[in-house]
Length: 174
Image (cartoon, rainbow, N blue to C red; front, top):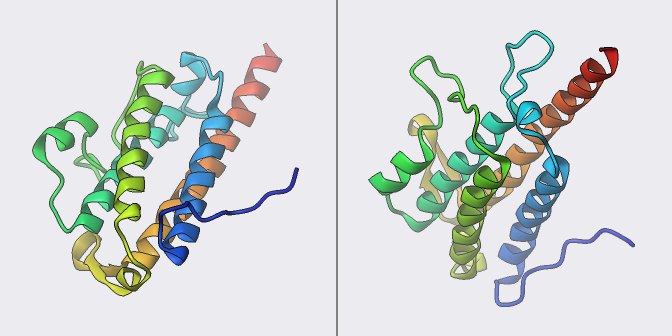
Protein backbone atom coordinates (compact mmCIF):
# COMPACT_ATOMS: atom_id res chain seq x y z
CA UNK A 1 0.00 0.00 0.00
CA UNK A 2 1.26 3.48 -0.79
CA UNK A 3 0.37 6.72 0.91
CA UNK A 4 -1.33 9.51 -0.98
CA UNK A 5 -3.45 12.58 -0.37
CA UNK A 6 -6.51 12.59 -2.56
CA UNK A 7 -8.73 15.65 -2.72
CA UNK A 8 -12.25 15.03 -1.50
CA UNK A 9 -14.86 14.82 -4.27
CA UNK A 10 -17.03 17.92 -4.23
CA UNK A 11 -14.32 20.16 -2.77
CA UNK A 12 -12.41 22.73 -4.77
CA UNK A 13 -9.10 21.12 -5.85
CA UNK A 14 -6.66 23.02 -3.61
CA UNK A 15 -9.10 23.15 -0.68
CA UNK A 16 -9.60 19.40 -1.09
CA UNK A 17 -5.89 18.71 -1.08
CA UNK A 18 -5.36 20.82 2.05
CA UNK A 19 -8.37 19.17 3.67
CA UNK A 20 -6.92 15.75 2.80
CA UNK A 21 -3.90 16.57 5.00
CA UNK A 22 -6.24 17.27 7.93
CA UNK A 23 -8.26 14.12 7.28
CA UNK A 24 -5.12 11.96 7.04
CA UNK A 25 -3.63 13.46 10.20
CA UNK A 26 -6.86 12.91 12.13
CA UNK A 27 -7.02 9.29 10.95
CA UNK A 28 -3.44 8.78 12.19
CA UNK A 29 -4.30 10.35 15.57
CA UNK A 30 -7.19 7.93 16.03
CA UNK A 31 -4.94 5.02 15.09
CA UNK A 32 -2.22 6.23 17.50
CA UNK A 33 -4.57 6.25 20.51
CA UNK A 34 -6.60 3.16 19.61
CA UNK A 35 -7.03 0.81 22.55
CA UNK A 36 -5.52 3.22 25.07
CA UNK A 37 -6.60 2.51 28.65
CA UNK A 38 -8.03 5.23 30.85
CA UNK A 39 -4.91 5.10 33.00
CA UNK A 40 -2.65 5.66 29.99
CA UNK A 41 -4.98 8.35 28.59
CA UNK A 42 -4.61 10.27 31.87
CA UNK A 43 -0.82 9.63 32.20
CA UNK A 44 1.14 12.88 32.51
CA UNK A 45 4.66 11.61 31.86
CA UNK A 46 7.36 10.14 34.08
CA UNK A 47 7.34 13.16 36.42
CA UNK A 48 3.61 13.91 36.20
CA UNK A 49 4.18 17.38 34.75
CA UNK A 50 3.17 16.99 31.11
CA UNK A 51 -0.14 17.29 29.29
CA UNK A 52 -1.87 13.92 29.15
CA UNK A 53 -3.08 12.35 25.92
CA UNK A 54 -6.63 13.14 27.02
CA UNK A 55 -5.73 16.81 27.46
CA UNK A 56 -4.06 16.90 24.06
CA UNK A 57 -7.03 15.31 22.28
CA UNK A 58 -9.45 17.75 23.90
CA UNK A 59 -7.11 20.66 23.11
CA UNK A 60 -6.94 19.67 19.44
CA UNK A 61 -10.73 19.45 19.27
CA UNK A 62 -11.12 22.89 20.89
CA UNK A 63 -8.57 24.55 18.61
CA UNK A 64 -10.14 22.97 15.52
CA UNK A 65 -13.59 24.04 16.70
CA UNK A 66 -12.35 27.63 16.83
CA UNK A 67 -10.98 27.28 13.29
CA UNK A 68 -14.35 26.00 12.07
CA UNK A 69 -15.97 29.18 13.30
CA UNK A 70 -13.14 31.42 12.07
CA UNK A 71 -13.63 29.97 8.60
CA UNK A 72 -17.37 30.58 8.90
CA UNK A 73 -16.73 34.14 10.02
CA UNK A 74 -18.77 33.59 13.18
CA UNK A 75 -18.05 33.43 16.91
CA UNK A 76 -18.10 30.01 18.57
CA UNK A 77 -21.60 29.58 20.06
CA UNK A 78 -21.72 29.71 23.85
CA UNK A 79 -23.16 26.18 24.16
CA UNK A 80 -20.18 24.78 22.22
CA UNK A 81 -17.74 26.88 24.26
CA UNK A 82 -19.24 25.36 27.40
CA UNK A 83 -19.30 21.81 26.01
CA UNK A 84 -15.70 21.86 24.71
CA UNK A 85 -14.15 24.22 27.23
CA UNK A 86 -11.49 26.87 26.75
CA UNK A 87 -8.28 26.56 24.73
CA UNK A 88 -6.25 27.53 27.79
CA UNK A 89 -6.91 27.85 31.51
CA UNK A 90 -6.25 30.97 33.59
CA UNK A 91 -2.58 30.06 33.87
CA UNK A 92 -2.26 29.83 30.07
CA UNK A 93 -2.00 26.04 30.12
CA UNK A 94 -4.04 23.39 28.34
CA UNK A 95 -6.99 22.66 30.66
CA UNK A 96 -6.87 19.50 32.74
CA UNK A 97 -8.78 16.48 31.48
CA UNK A 98 -8.94 13.40 33.64
CA UNK A 99 -11.26 10.41 33.70
CA UNK A 100 -12.90 11.25 30.37
CA UNK A 101 -13.17 8.05 28.31
CA UNK A 102 -11.33 7.88 25.00
CA UNK A 103 -14.56 7.17 23.14
CA UNK A 104 -16.14 10.36 24.52
CA UNK A 105 -13.11 12.47 23.59
CA UNK A 106 -13.04 11.05 20.07
CA UNK A 107 -16.80 11.36 19.55
CA UNK A 108 -16.68 15.06 20.40
CA UNK A 109 -13.64 15.49 18.15
CA UNK A 110 -15.42 13.57 15.35
CA UNK A 111 -18.21 16.16 15.48
CA UNK A 112 -15.69 18.98 15.05
CA UNK A 113 -14.05 17.15 12.14
CA UNK A 114 -17.47 16.76 10.47
CA UNK A 115 -18.17 20.47 10.88
CA UNK A 116 -14.73 21.26 9.49
CA UNK A 117 -15.36 19.04 6.46
CA UNK A 118 -18.70 20.76 5.87
CA UNK A 119 -17.01 24.19 5.96
CA UNK A 120 -14.36 23.04 3.49
CA UNK A 121 -17.04 21.71 1.13
CA UNK A 122 -18.37 25.27 0.90
CA UNK A 123 -14.99 26.91 0.19
CA UNK A 124 -13.61 27.80 -3.22
CA UNK A 125 -9.91 27.90 -4.03
CA UNK A 126 -10.22 31.70 -4.20
CA UNK A 127 -11.46 31.68 -0.58
CA UNK A 128 -8.04 30.39 0.49
CA UNK A 129 -6.65 33.93 0.11
CA UNK A 130 -9.25 35.36 2.49
CA UNK A 131 -7.79 36.61 5.76
CA UNK A 132 -9.40 35.72 9.09
CA UNK A 133 -8.68 36.84 12.62
CA UNK A 134 -6.39 34.52 14.49
CA UNK A 135 -5.29 34.50 18.13
CA UNK A 136 -4.30 37.68 19.97
CA UNK A 137 -5.07 40.11 17.14
CA UNK A 138 -3.09 38.18 14.52
CA UNK A 139 -4.49 37.30 11.12
CA UNK A 140 -4.02 34.32 8.80
CA UNK A 141 -5.22 33.20 5.43
CA UNK A 142 -7.71 30.38 5.25
CA UNK A 143 -5.03 28.41 3.35
CA UNK A 144 -2.67 28.73 6.33
CA UNK A 145 -5.49 27.88 8.77
CA UNK A 146 -6.29 24.58 7.08
CA UNK A 147 -2.60 23.68 6.90
CA UNK A 148 -2.18 24.71 10.55
CA UNK A 149 -4.90 22.32 11.71
CA UNK A 150 -2.95 19.37 10.30
CA UNK A 151 0.41 20.70 11.49
CA UNK A 152 -0.87 21.37 15.01
CA UNK A 153 -2.21 17.83 15.23
CA UNK A 154 1.10 16.35 14.07
CA UNK A 155 2.93 18.39 16.72
CA UNK A 156 0.77 17.03 19.53
CA UNK A 157 0.83 13.51 18.08
CA UNK A 158 4.60 13.55 18.57
CA UNK A 159 3.98 14.35 22.24
CA UNK A 160 1.46 11.50 22.45
CA UNK A 161 4.03 9.13 20.92
CA UNK A 162 6.50 10.07 23.66
CA UNK A 163 3.86 9.63 26.37
CA UNK A 164 3.07 6.16 25.02
CA UNK A 165 6.75 5.26 24.97
CA UNK A 166 7.29 6.45 28.55
CA UNK A 167 4.09 4.71 29.65
CA UNK A 168 5.26 1.37 28.22
CA UNK A 169 8.74 1.78 29.69
CA UNK A 170 7.28 2.53 33.12
CA UNK A 171 4.96 -0.47 32.92
CA UNK A 172 7.82 -2.79 31.94
CA UNK A 173 9.98 -1.72 34.91
CA UNK A 174 7.49 -2.95 37.49
